Length: 72
Image 1 (tube, rainbow, N blue to C red):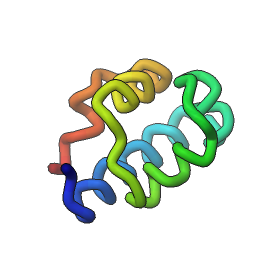
Image 2: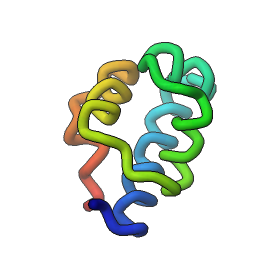
Image 3: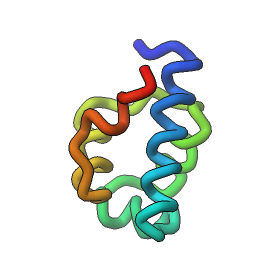
């Protein structure tokens, strides 16, 4: 399981790339097929998303998945 600071780092990367892409949380959630509240929880570091969810988010953002882990 990810530690709090690791969750926050991943969440920060999701936020950074989401805003860079010009997506709202709702738009990213729809594109990644996850609930919009879940995107917010991930960005705030409140939950530890599964690898499957992170892959969906990376795909929706047109990123290589490792980009979400660079700061770990």
